[in-house]
Image (cartoon, rainbow over all chains, first blue to last red; front, side, top):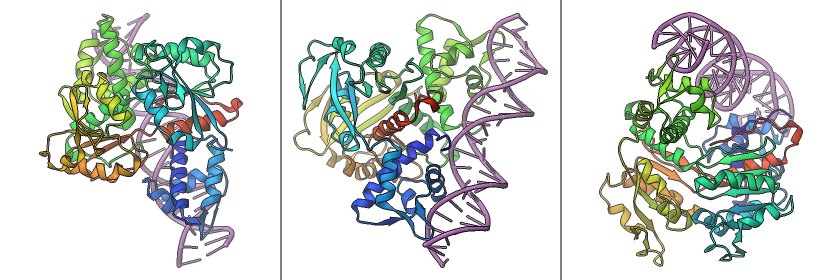
Length: 216
Length: 216
DNA sequence: TTTTGTGAACGTGTTCACAGCG
DNA sequence: CGCTGTGAACACGTTCACAAAA
């Protein structure tokens, strides 16, 4: 199996989304063209991405929707459930706990922590906000992933706590690059960067605009 | 001025952040090495990025912090204020309105809309939730940018409304690629893609792990 | 004929390495 | 000597174009 690039993984996620839609529409087969179209991806790119993992299609016909969906599901590691701990019970943390879409994909938010005594003990859906002080005492392996939804100043400390608790992946909402061991993967959602990239684009001369790219 | 790539713009945003920190620390000069270090960017990359816009440094010394900060501020279009309308007064929309960090960068959230009668009229900080039905009647130019923080099914309709209202940039939290005219720029924050890219990474054999990348 | 799978060509972004200047 | 600015080399991702298969 060749090295898989980050853009390829992100697109697999998009194909997976389209496949679920297409499956719901009752189609049995889908071409690389149709598969990429909805997400603005060329058919050549779709075929190249999929060919990294095997030959899933049939020449002249396309891909079997159910089969390809199952393959990508396994490739992305979505054929199991992931236990996620959220740290920070502010707006973002609450939003994540309230949103049901992640559980559908296999990501169960099983705990939410905060430092603020006013928040500790409050109910959020099925969960009760726990004191982040007890996080260092959870058994390793309790959580697979952590989400950092705290103010900036707490982010690195929380990252350290999550790493100590044995998480192997972190989704970070704080606008800062986190120091973590090589064995831990971090993805940062940086809204400031997105806003600023919009303002850069809007500040440019209209006449020299390029194709409208979308991070999707 | 050469064509500026998307990764370069995102890094400018990161340099800008470091420069504000470094300025607060009272430093007058900063080297390309120090400037990139905190965000995990090499000094060569820093110099290359900056050289796209001019020669801001002094050989043997580095860059003047205040001056470079002002230059990047202008390049990113942060030397003015941007009027932002948020559509969707759920958790994400509320989080954006409550967070003060964006105003510091020049992004003023000046309105929040929703469709739900239970939410319309409610106060969120300084704002009152307005009926999204009145959005088509705002004067063009009232908003520079829009944020889509609605459920998936409403996203494209809201995008159309925002475009009709004359916004030129959209920050989209719905997991879907939006159809907009070429003159409008969209950036999508897709949490499902981020979660799935984490699960892909965590599912891979540890031994073949690569350098830990961070989208920052 | 349709559509995949894929090497080869291409384009773009990153890194190297060093000349140039302070 | 230190650090920037930058062409040249390199690595990587995308697109092309076509043989192969249904």
